[in-house]
Image 1 (cartoon, rainbow, N blue to C red):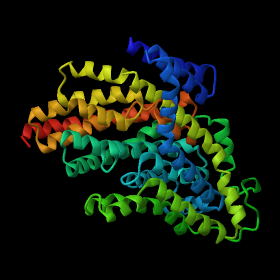
Image 2 (image 1 turned 60 degrees about the vertical axis):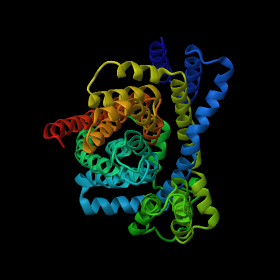
Image 3 (image 1 turned 90 degrees about the vertical axis):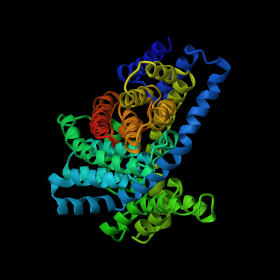
Image 4 (image 1 turned 45 degrees about the horizontal axis):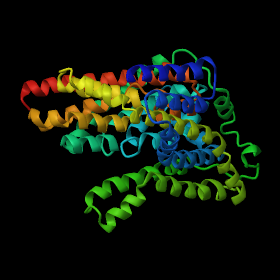
Length: 457
């Protein structure tokens, strides 16, 4: 019955958004409430569940999306994105720009959470798309996909780190194997996205309007013709690298000092994504705005103008979090996972399948990884697996949580809304690409596992 409720809920959601063209925010909230009631959650708890799901998601997303949108807007209107895209196009040539940016995204995603890194790169994606005369989706899809691959299998991201702790997996081996598997996936991401994008995909009207005006620097955005100079490409690159360096400093530095020490606390503060983005926005306020010829008021207006379109992304993402919370609290994902756990599958296969089911049922890759490793912990401990085998089982869990990104995943809404994809086109492109790469990643993991097992390592 819970399975039927979940299927009916997703079908109703897709029907409302795709067939009847209703606002995704409204449909997500409505379907979440109906699923909660149908699954037997007491009526007096439903409203609180909606609030909890929205707040839990927006607590991490709203600040990052808001600050990221401000940073992207000042880079855009100051001419920084155009300068950078022109520089890269001249340096690599038009045919290699997408591959170059996908490679850069691979490196960016190691220390930076998926949503933060993607948001930081949005103005660069737009700039390159304008320079090449293509839709942003042609660049954004492979960039987003490889960043998500890193997010689910490479430490220090929370899902894989938490999963390693539960399974007793070695973080060093998890990092080595994760990076080794993601490198060929980066190449596959580029070519698979190219094939998926072989037809022209129409952009949503609001995103198309934003993209068409990108880099124009109109007075509607608070900028005027008094700006004296555009930023240099090195200055723009510095603005992109600053939050990455701060987050990396917090992550790497924090692991080198005693836990709970003053140094660890300070580094954790510096490396917090929200603090890193806030500092970067303040620096860009001066370097890209005031120092380049705008008044403080004009720079503020440019940044404020980014918040209106960002609000749509924030609210839809929060509503997706509500849907995921309802599916989790109703026990739908857990029931499916426990049923599969009794099926007697090989542990490496079970790791992938369980994570994939949990990912599809409740949306969060991190939750899917943590829940799956918790269900497998006893079996792994009793199985006497080697250090490398355990790290490979963890990788299989991560790749299971990679694919099937759809309407209950906040990342789905961030990618599709920033790239101007409708829900239907998002399912045909982003969902398909993440699933293809997830299956490919698992195939690499399973082959390696078979070789390691045969070799007795």
